[in-house]
Length: 201
Image 1 (spheres, rainbow, N blue to C red):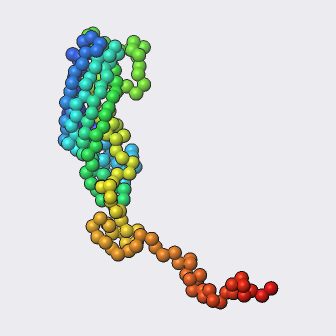
Image 2 (cartoon, rainbow, N blue to C red):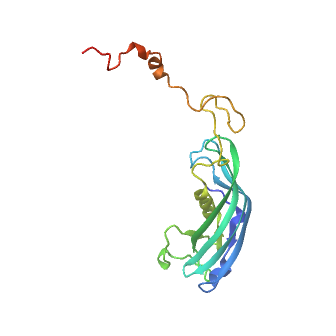
Image 3 (cartoon, helix red, strand yellow):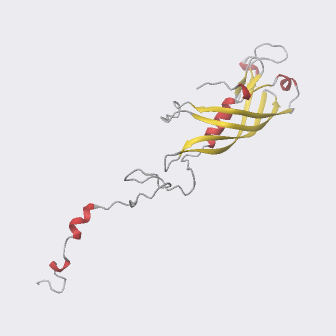
């Protein structure tokens, strides 16, 4: 899934020219960021989108790239795991990722893979020295989502018999259905069975 969000792309050319340890701060803000289009998570409910995203990151110059550290927050519409109703959840996430350049900022020449120490999982800074934070922010928000989202802690869920939302109505059904396997025993009269004292020897 690739959808570029221009609000989360930053030029780091000047920072790449500075000495190791130099820093910059960038504010993150976008109306929406696609987290999943419904295919990679197998979500038949459709797209998963973060809205009103806001945050700030610090970018530190390294010997072979930059380190991005920061926090983001957004609202994500989810389906409650109990009542199945959709609700907006405020999500906070932290990220710490490395970016490595593909072009030498001084000479404009492509950087050979053997000229830098490649960091596993590092993102690339493109040929125009632009750093796209869309993917690391997307991953951070996905990791921060709860495994079983709840619209509220005391959500009553749905009735297993009629499917009614128990947060809205009391359908009158009990949570436990009667087990009919014991009906035969309930009909037995214990007087028909002799006790140990009355049994014939």
